[in-house]
Length: 306
Ligand SMILES: CC(=O)N[C@H](C=O)[C@@H](O)[C@H](O)[C@H](O)CO
Ligand SMILES: CC(=O)C(=O)O
Image 1 (cartoon, rainbow, N blue to C red):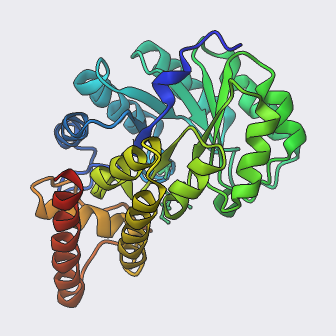
Image 2 (image 1 turned 90 degrees about the horizontal axis):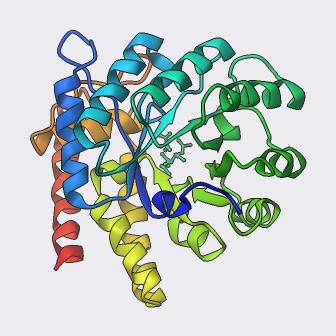
């Protein structure tokens, strides 16, 4: 049995978007405002500095600023997972130590990126992060962006450590998700990555999910989760299908995060544009599509909450 409270990580965990001011600098006020909003919506937690949070596009100092702002605003209310993945192990270790200092509830990391790394190398990278604090660790498995294919063997070895409490799986195979769940054992968390498969992942063993599109429609993922827990699979599926049509739309813009931020701006949360090379919404035609999409999402949120 793990000695950590795993229930704190079960549920809907929003991958927080980046927040910049008009000069492209970290905007901690906007970070706090959006984090506050999510706490009020009632999600389980926030995943800070991951793909959606653009951690890889920010300096170590900037990443610390963001996490500290999140902790100051909602650290007592939500489960906060700090993504500390970086190309260099020493940066990840520095970020992990900072996460512990400011009271984050867990750290998480992708394999170090850019170099083609051996499994031993990735293992040592993760181990250095794990050993640097007393926080629990969640592996971030996203082979389509890192190029690293986590084997069941390495997963099993990592999961044997008390501190390694789970894996966030963004790979699309729900079979792999089930295999990782089985390999990790009963008290090992598996968190669903692909938002399009939240219900599928949940049905085959995921304990919850961390997602990049949750941030514009957390209420709809909470709805799927409620239906699933209540055993109303037909209704859960109906909502998953609605969500998937919205995700298809979101993915049709020059960048997913540019689209999500444009939507939140219409709702009064100005998080700035994503950082290059991620593209913002620019054209008038795209802005018009964003307005329509936002209206559709809001009307579904109303229905889900009714
Ligand atoms: C590849 C990728 O970034 N996956 C994200 C995290 O797992 C998802 O949350 C996606 O953003 C989402 O499913 C939209 O495709
Ligand atoms: C989707 C996700 O988990 C991330 O943005 O890191």
